Image 1: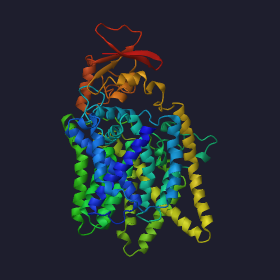
Image 2: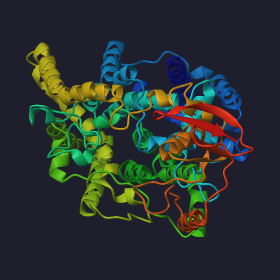
Image 3: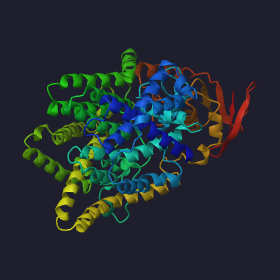
Image 4: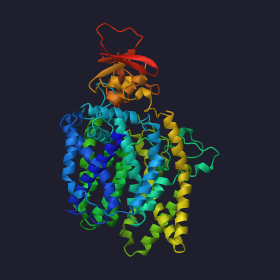
Length: 619
């Protein structure tokens, strides 16, 4: 817990110093107009992401020294804090009591299950992220994967750079702790992002929009006598509410944190910065917006498409004659930042025969089922869209307003969602990337915008009722939020029990993975330059990769026929299969059951149990 709190403190401090410093530099000494406390707080999230990107660039340039050596990142963090010390001044903000209430509500719903259960990290994607982060910490210039010789980087490394940055900032912490830290950041940042979008329409709509984003689930609790949280979407029957990957993206605030959610926050930040940059043309703000857009791509390449469309619409709808240079600064900076990862991957794509489609795509819902999962948010969002449209029609310059841009963003998101609905079930996607045409990359964006418009409608509802009675208005809006919060509250309670019982893949608090276990002690001997073979347990082999970044001499994934370690490039995947058929790789270390004979010349390094069986690690 101490490591997590320290990481959170440093994330906020460094993020604010870097983000606000860049914002003031963009505004030539002052914060650009229209960006108040909420926007600056959101920009602090982007500031820390950009700090980690800078650390990653230095890591690549130095051949793996920045994350590979313990003291470099703390020194860079101290330098960032010193350079941005002038940013730490009191700011005007909404009533802090509201901020406190929101923090407690979000903590209880989405973080408390982790505190009680032990760990919010789950099987699925997080094991890959843990292993890739360990490879950075082990001195690899870029994270490549568990396959010896044939592994190459193909997954955006932004998330892994964040994990490595957090670990190095707080000595003694681990990527597991960093995952929990990023989960707390996402839980706070998503409602904040929605609030900042809603404030583009009405400056007072931020708080109700944040409340909608963090509290309003569906009405699935009314459809059955025993509502249960579904952790495997394929098991959901008739409803997409109370499902961990629901089209109602509120449930994405439940653990674990994933790169997509943080990228979504940056999409909102880039949108806010784009509006500021084109409304009062500023190349500095545009360059900062472009850097944030590039960081979106380093976390989730599909969401970079969304961010680029949003920036284009902002420039088109409210850009002025002098906005050509602004657009160039925005697009050029985005291309440079995203190109840090995309350039080498594109070269490898051409060199090694393209991608193998290894994406495991999530559930795609019928449109009516997906929209029903929004519950009360759906009519509120529709009302908010109507109110924004009316405001534009009544305004002399409404067509060039920020509200008009948000409607444009909504229309573009609806169009892209329509494309994914038509392509539902299609394999292959675009250029071997199946996620680009998957609904799972569009619903979070739709929910982000829907919650912003719902906040506008909720504020309007309050204003109408408060003309008669403020108490009645508060009670009415509270009733709406309370009805919407029933499903999230049930999900939170059930998530606590799932994590505590180590069910559905939430196993990272189990004794086998705890500090001091055989796995942890064995992993401490291994690194990304080593190759290990584990006789009799692919599960133990996979766990060793996650906690050390080691390469696996052999591994069998029962769900795959060939390419068991998911090598991303076609020619390299075939080469790996041929090598395995020819006998595989010579290991530097061997892990085998303790009751098996030990070969001559082998030295036992560690002994212990995993999965109820005794094991030994030998060199």
